[in-house]
Length: 86
Image 1 (tube, helix red, strand yellow):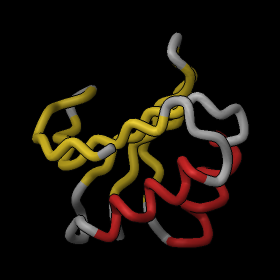
Image 2 (tube, helix red, strand yellow):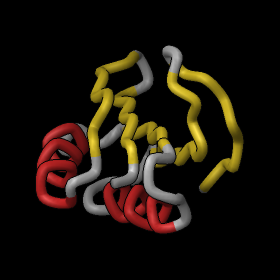
Image 3 (cartoon, one colour):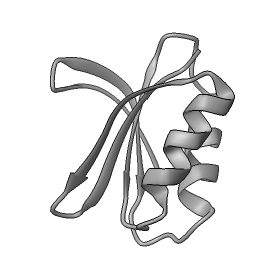
Image 4 (cartoon, one colour):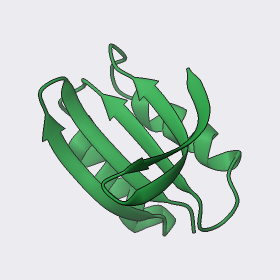
C-alpha cells in the first residue's frame, strides 16, 4: 500500500507514495490520512486513485485539515494528488 521512497515528481521531492487505485470512497482518503500520519510537517505524499469522487474529497480534505494540496491531476490511470503535510 505505501512505498517509502524519495523521488521527484514535477520537481517536488516525494517522501511517500500511496497507491489507492482500485479502491472506492472513502478508502483513498483514509489511506492518505494514514500515510500523512507517518510523515513530518512539510513532507510530501503522492497518491494515485481511480475513484471519481476522490478529486472532490481531496479538495475538501485539504481545506478542512490544513494540508496543502499541491496537485490534483486527471491522468490516464485515474487521478494523481500531491499533498504537503502541515
